[in-house]
Length: 287
Image 1 (spheres, helix red, strand yellow):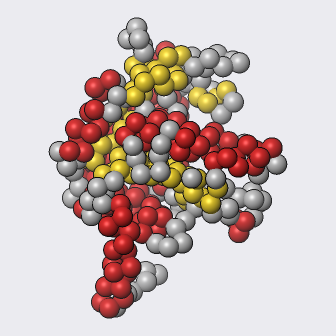
Image 2 (cartoon, helix red, strand yellow):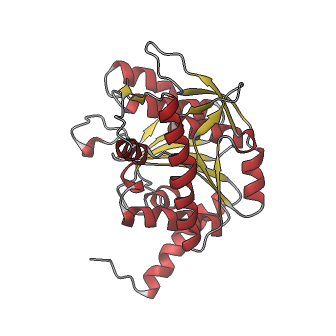
Image 3 (cartoon, helix red, strand yellow):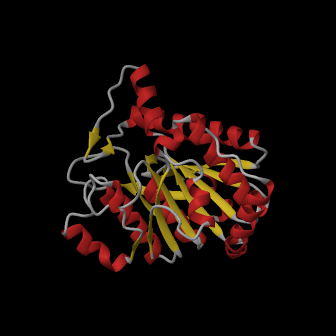
């Protein structure tokens, strides 16, 4: 059941948010969009509404997205099995064609359309546009195919879009030195883009509350982490499994100059606004 607010209560909410709006106006916030918030239609609508509101109050919003379930779905349609190596999608030449088609085509343009239906202005980009993302083959203990490691970020096209009043929506495929195309992890791409843009914040949307001291108990959220403490938390096993690469992205972003990095629970409607415009925030902040 939706919570009904009186007009006075609505006004109080806006007044309480005002200091945060003033703080972030004119600043860049990069949001990596993924997880359940990308699949659930109600959550998707909430995220897009958050983007439009942030832009309207003067925040420069950049949305970086993944699309793993959609890629897997398309591969299944053509009778090709998805294969993962240490949590990363093995990307042969045929799979790379599907990745580029799904990410830079369908998913990206669907998000552009959805944002515009919410009265926002969006521009869909991929890492190939304007040479935004350049990459080389990622070297790993087992061959990953066309999985890339970013070598250079050229954010000029993103800054141009922002200056013209658009929200850039970026899919994470990148160009190689010989014309090849690489599949890039969206968390890594978001962290590097945020650093190159001099972003005030990087926000990674996930399907958990944030970093938990006990991964079986969501009440053990660690709200704030200094990046210098991350190696110790890894040794203690508090940071483990799939959280390791996400948190390392946050660490890299902060060390490259991003003001703060956050891992937030995308299952909660309007979690981005809660993080930005309330005292308590949500999830785990890295500084």
